[in-house]
Amino acid sequence: MQEKHFELKTILASVFREKDNRLKKRLIYNNAVFGGLSNKWIIVAFIIMPFLMYAAIFNPATFKELGIAQAIVFYIILLVVAMQVVAIGTYFNNKRVIKTATSSWDKYFPEVDFKMIISSGVTPYVDFKKHYESALEDGLEGEALKSRLDDAFKQMEEENSVLVESIRRDKAKKEEK
Image (cartoon, rainbow, N blue to C red; front, side, top):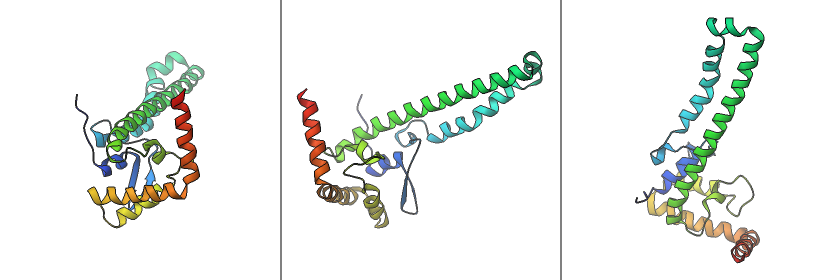
């Protein structure tokens, strides 16, 4: 099966939400841009599940059989299960989006790890959002956007050269093992 190749803006739209040329990282990544499940469905499931469980447990027939104490206990237990289902669903959705986005990202920037772009921790590319927002304000798309981001990556790597070198040494050490 041939892998699809996605545009740079599509890849970034899966993990960032853009509004007025400002970026905000998504908590639940959007797989809809790659032809998968939209993050809105996960959010809807998260909101609706407690109400569905309430209706299932506290309807007259079930409530009469359980009684108030057991109904409340079952409701709490089912809420915990529902939270786990949503958390697991979110995890696998985000993992799938990262896998799909990384394969397309590597065609644009093979030397830049996509996970470092979306990481909340300290990376050499911590200012990526600032550079991408600047490119959005200038209305760049396609090859112009890629060129601007290429320059931005070089600049960020120069600014954080110690961290970049440390990451490369660590990666080389892991490859030796």
